[in-house]
Amino acid sequence: MSDLKRLLEILSNAHGVSGYEGNIRKIIEEEVRPYVDEISTDKMGNLIATKKGGSPVVMLAAHMDEIGLMVKYVDDKGFARFTKTGGWFDQTLLNQRMIMHTEYGPIYGVLGSKPPHAIKEEDKKKVIKAEDMFIDIGAKSKEDADKLGVKTGTPVTSDIDFKPLGNDLVTGKAFDNRAGCAMLIEALRQMKDVKATVHAVFTVQEEVGLKGAKTSAFRLNPDVALATDVTITGDHPGIDKKDSAIEMGKGPSVTVSDADGRGIIVPESVLKWLKSAAESNNIPYQLEVGSGGTTDATAIHLTKDGIPTGVLSMPTRYIHTPVSVLSMDDLEKSAELIARALEIVDRFF
Figure 1: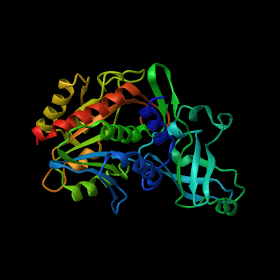
Figure 2: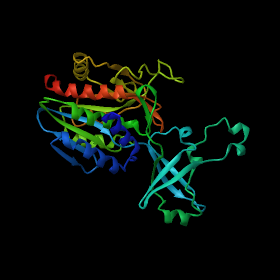
Figure 3: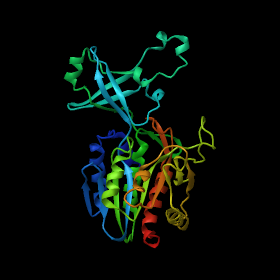
Figure 4: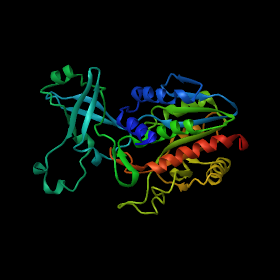
């Protein structure tokens, strides 16, 4: 197993829902330490790893948090009701095994609902809503659940492990955006002869409002920034190329615009910089104009009087499920592109 695949496995298997990224921060801090000059954690919990240099000042962003749940209340029979943290499609939640992260340690539970035998025929065609689901931890009562540490405010994540697939594809939870975190760490390891000052920021709470990106960008006020994330692909059944022209195995995705322009329209200067780095090093890439979600770049580029910002994304199938799939070759190419781009950024900004 390659070092990068092992790193992604560690990050994917670790747990850190929005607002509770501490476990991820510890892992990343140890991984980046050999490649940077200083590391700090700000008041929001963003991890900032800095490689000192001259001008320009570059901010790289990858969010640490993953989507999950939070216990809303526990009923008298010991079943936990919950709210969603981040963007879940309710149907993907049903019948998952979950981990409740209590003050006493992990407690396992399953997301339950009515069995099919008890569902009326007309209701079987309907998506079961999260508000009608519950988490069964084996408790006999509210008091029993409380003794286990499961109570209002307990964060919850999916219980699933990273696994290899065929053709150097891998599957796991939280690739959004542990893939971006792995990409930044590998880019820091690879970069050489970088004249710029580089701040690699591993941000918090992206899935619930791009919060860590807003505060860290305000503090650093860089000359140029690059956010990393994942993006949907149009190369599997159920989605058309008109919805996404991006494919796995054809290199990283360079965003031109996302969310129909409401998120970010990437400046031509940033596109020229990234394209130059890719083409001069024979790194394949794909251009993306998206209609869906946004990334940390949306918050960064609107900071203070504006920051030229780009987005480099990993083509990833089944985003926002615990069984996302990506290509390790794409991940390696993405890290290489960031490293090569950093080596020439002073020519563009």
